[in-house]
Length: 281
Image 1 (cartoon, helix red, strand yellow):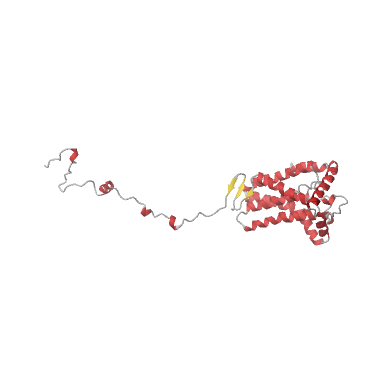
Image 2: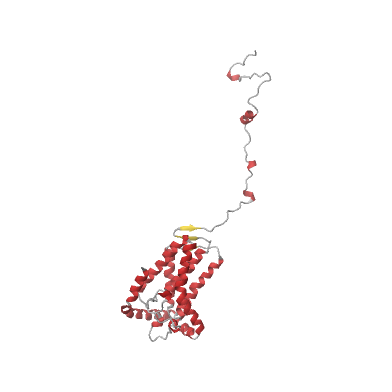
């Protein structure tokens, strides 16, 4: 369903060209005003380093879809408690992106005429349409960067799946590398990256998938706790049951000894308040 909507928006390229071009120049102008316009310098630097450019293009083309779908499958198999909010967050991220693509088309830097950007992906032989994962890319869908949105989603889901392992922090490298790659290959602006992070984090929090520092995961309103062994009580907390046994009562002592005291002749004396004593035979 989402792919069909994406395809429909992409088919409107002719009518979206003018607004996308204007919005692309607007984004670049805002970045120049904020001092964030690093795209052109980094793009030219990458072009001068062929081997590094090949690596960056490979990451752009293959990690976006392949790694994300792999983590989603792993989540389904190994983390059923996390899968549903993770899936919903990914769907919401894409829905938000589609809405912005339709309402606010933005031309990526590589397509801006007379700006001097080099299409690194096309230079590497992948063509100008860019089809990561086999899906033809919408040429005017720079804002927000779904490459960045998906990368943030991957990092958060990995940390949710591995709450007890320090290696989970390596997942942060994925969105960091993705942010660098999409900018230096002239596929996105810095503001696109920021927007992608914002959209993804909003979707992750909105579906209840967050990672807590104490090693717990809140997923769909449920607290998934770490499996920890039961605590061993301290010696001071151990109660000696022999010290808590109640002392025997007089009645219990009498019962255990065979009843009330009897005289040696076998006749029981009556209580003084219950009438005269029995006469001896």
